[in-house]
Structures are given as structure tokens and as C-alpha cells.
Length: 422
Image (tube, rainbow, N blue to C red; front, side, top):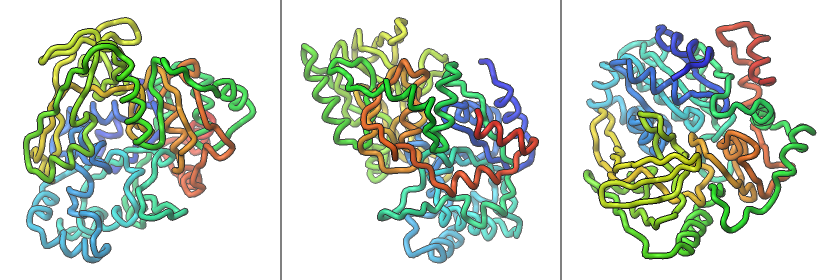
């Protein structure tokens, strides 16, 4: 594949001994860079903030690796339990590098106690006990999950341990998802909560109701809306639905976790003509996570899908894993890597590139949620919107301030120009 100059610089920086914060807006190729780096790197622990991200990345969750659980009893209790756990201490001693994806969804308390655990377990007073840390993500997208409705989010960068890590930041600024320069410029404005006159001029005409037979994906904030629409649209197709049950193996508790977090459903119901979405990246680049198509042929061992681009792909079942803290599978789920695609949630769409989307912003509540939704498509012509309002594009001022103060491995004025005037 062809790498942008941003990505080439990132790959070189990742080969250095520095702690690296790899950031950038939606569609700038962060996932592609880290997949390439991990593929060629040994003695690295690949972690993610959520179970879903960990499964897609083929890694472990940040919480399980450091023994955080659900932070029962508070930070001190978590610390004491973890440093007395032989398995946690052993794996931290033998690890050289940790890579943490979707870092924006890790809270400051979790970040801080993990750093303390690493220092104690490794018997080293340096930050993270001398572990090399690579953090990947965009704080302008989805925030940490918190209990209740706290207005101030506990971002990881608010922890003193973030500053002690002394990251070398590298912002990816070239959007590879889309070649539509004007759309990329508008998205960059929306990322920072700016709804300019030009943005309104381009987005307001996209405000419309999608027709019932819309051949694209509707993005909703709530899961119930998604399940109902997918069921209703499947019912409109003739013929009986074919049932593809996901086959699970492993620890019962982890199987339940896999059912909740895997990108594939427990039961995949399909009919000929059903609109489906691929839920993984193809190593042969025939499709990516989010590619849409319609079902043309089905058997027990393969499904033929005609992509919206007009080409056809024959896909076979794939296996998704939950790994234990040592990187060994605790549970596996095997089925075709497809979902019904008339609708999906905004959270589930993160990381996906959609060919066509209708975004309903009516129920959004989180900072960055609307930006995540709109940035799934490559072009304005692939997008229609519902529920757009003056408060649709909320950005936490703490996030804006964090990025303004970030010191990159380049001239400061150049960095700010990239970040705020893409």
C-alpha cells in the first residue's frame, strides 16, 4: 500500500525508543500504522481501552492487563491487589513495550494506577517502571465512560502520570479515508466544535429524511433503534431468513463478554438481497471494516456479497478472540464477519469507513459523538443527516486546551496549523 508522509514519519518514530502519542482526526490512518508496526515488532503487549477495540485489534484490554477490574474499592485497593498478583508482576517484568489503542476512552484514575502498578511490579522508579509506552487515539472523539452524568470527563491526560510519561506526540494530519478536500476541511472544523458558515452551507442541504429503501447505513445513538430497523428491513425481503449461529468456545464468563463485545452477533439472520457490512479489514484489501454490500449467494461455508462499488467478494467464516492478560485465547467466536447494515450505533461505527450513511443526531449526548458519526463517510455526497442542531458538535474545552499545548516533534506553529487548519 502507499503510505502518506505523515504515516512514514510515524512508523519511523515508532521504531525509536521514545514513548509515543500517535494522534490525529478520524480517517487519518492511525489503525493502519499501528497494525503495520505491530506486525513487525516482537515483545510488545497490544492493549485497547474497550473489549470491542481489543477484539478487532487482536489484543487485550488495558484493564485486564494491569488487573484493574472495574476499579473496585478505589485506586489504592486496585494497586494493592495488582502488585500482589504474581501473574501481573511477571508479565510486566518481561514486557518491553505496551501499545494502547483508543486511549481517549481510558480515564485518568485508571491511567494513574496502571502507571503505579508498572513501577512497583518492575522495581523501577522510572515512569511505568521503564516500560516503553505507545498511546494511540484522538481525545476529540469518544470520551471515557463514567458513572452518572459527570460534566467534567476524567481524560487520561489529566493524570499526573500522563505528563510523567513524557510522550513524543505525532499527529497524523493527512486524511486517507477521503480525498474530498472540502469535506475534510469541514470535518476538521467540526472536530473542534466550529460550525462555520461554510459548514452550514454544505451540511444544511444534507438535512433530509432517508427513504425507507435507503441503501446505506443509518447511524443512531441508541441500540434499540438499530435492532428494530434491521429487523423491519429484513422482513421486507421475500423468502425465509437463513440462520447462521455464531459458534463459541471457551470460558463461560468470557463467552458472555464476547457476545457483548464481538463485532458479530450471536445469530446472523440473512436473506438474499440483505444489506450487510463487513466487520473486519481484509488482509487482501478487498474490503475494510464498514464496507457495504448486498447478499447474492449463501451456503454453510461461504457467502457471496456484491459490494456497492459493483465488485463481488466471497467471504468465509472468521474467528474473533478474547485474550487473557498473557495473550492466550479465553474464548472464541466464529461466524461470517458480517452484520445487517441498514443501521448501526455511532459507538459501533467508530473505526469503520462507510460507503453511504444517514446519520440521526437526535439522541447524541457525548462530546465528539456527532463528529465520529459524520466522519465515517468519504464524501458529503455519501451522507444525509437528521437532527442537526446548534449543540450537535460539543467539544470538551479541556481537550481543545490539551491539543493547543501539545509539543510535537516539529515546529509549534506548523503543528497548530495542521491541527486547527487542516
